[in-house]
Image (cartoon, rainbow, N blue to C red; front, side, top):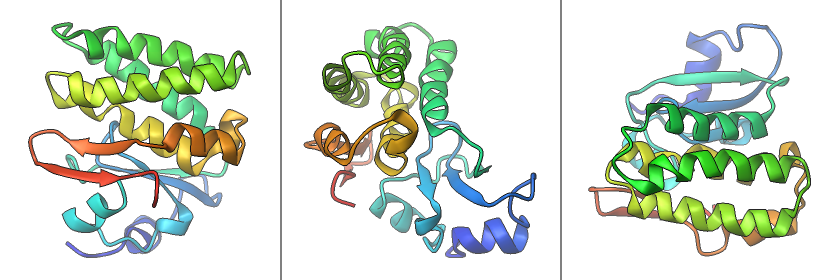
Length: 183
């Protein structure tokens, strides 16, 4: 552990499968945070990932080229959660479906500020109210996509500041809370 994302992506993985420029790297599986290229010098260890609002999860790393639409990837996180949900808890079962709908509203420029507020509250509810980490971690890729790739959602800096205020990334059961809004 301790090798950087840049080394893994470029030295070991030879960049993207398409040969196009790297735009984002997702670490930790389908519920891991998205890292922009400016964060590729992050060491791949628990502490460094947590300090930047990410997780190692099961260790999966997905590299996205410059053609990726990060708004679609954020929506995919909510869809993934809806499909995989066991249905026991409302934040995961209903929240993930509603999350995909709200992301659609943002992308389609419908009630953007209101939709951002709903998404912020929904992510907070999912993080702290879900019974397991499926629902609890679904906000990670959504919030990191919003933070680092706001242009894919048609958002302004003010929109991003609005949704990120007072949000934290919490990894349930570890007692470890890291602010995402200020990094």
